[in-house]
Amino acid sequence: MTKGVLAWLGLTMMAVAAAAQTTVTTSGGTTNTVPVFTGTSTVGNSPISVSGSNVGIGTTTPSFQLSVNGIIQSTGNVATWPLADGIRFDDSYSSMSRNWIISSGAAQPGYLVFRVSASAGTDPGAYGTTQMVIGPTGNVGIGTTNPGAKLEIDGNVKLTANSGASITFQDGSVQSVAYTGVLPGGDYADSVDVTGDRAKYDAGDLLVIDPDHPGKFLKSAAPYSTSVAGIFSTKPGTVGRRQTGPKSPDEVPMAMVGIVPTKVTAENGPIHPGDLLVTSSTLGYAMKGTDRNRMLGAVVGKALGNLDSGTGVVEVVVTLQ
Image (cartoon, rainbow, N blue to C red; front, top):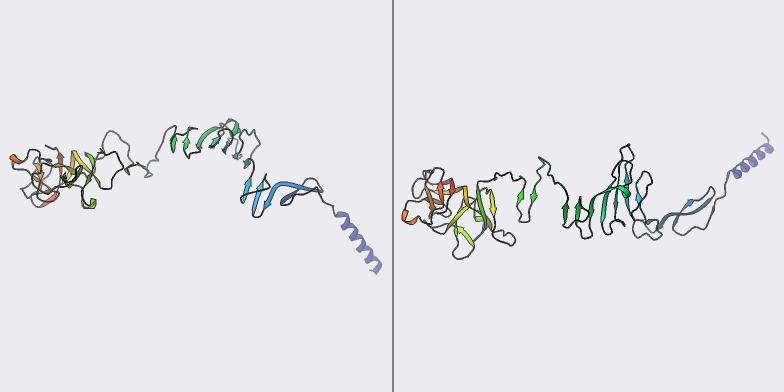
């Protein structure tokens, strides 16, 4: 191939390359704004801006890593949008799709509103039902748009079966079983304060009124005490509380009615079912009462079990008399 032919081929290729180039012009771009093609050969401003490490959509002064001035719609069809701002999510994968939104717009100022479309293909903003709101004070409403407490529910509440779910009340008590008319325990008890170290008290202890601390109770320590008041309950069916203030860590459930396991001693003879029980000289223990002249006001209850010697625990029908 001659040098003339090579030169001709080179000039031809340069001409083809020059013809393939298209001139792109700008129409007055703005600093820090991401450009966008506004035509086949022109570039202008897009709605996206950059300020340092922050990105803005619909704003040229983003204050966060992502700032959006307007509505965010994840996907789906465009529909009438009556709310001022919010996030819309569209499920477009089936003919039964429903849309839902999170909004804090003009429909309910100051509230974060969770709304779901009423039927497939409808716009949740225009026709949706509000399922949950969070108010400006932090109150959460489910089924209501104006919650009056930290959580207000207009409808049924269900704890899933066999999940171990429970409800904890402000006094610290926990309830996981519904009231069916049958008490979970065998007695009625009052929540009372005890004197001294709470950890030294146990279920089954016999309790008497503390003469030195009005309103408090302590373990029995003398025979035939007419200050006997009840028995530290093992599993009370119902616990009452006369105090109106917060629950004290020194409180114990004191059984006053019903059947309750009780610490007993045979120091005054063997105990058999039906025996009347009184306080003993053993700290916190009951014994059989035999001195009828001293039993008025000293009886805590009637034994349901036997104790031939030493100490033990028997069930007692609490009948203060």
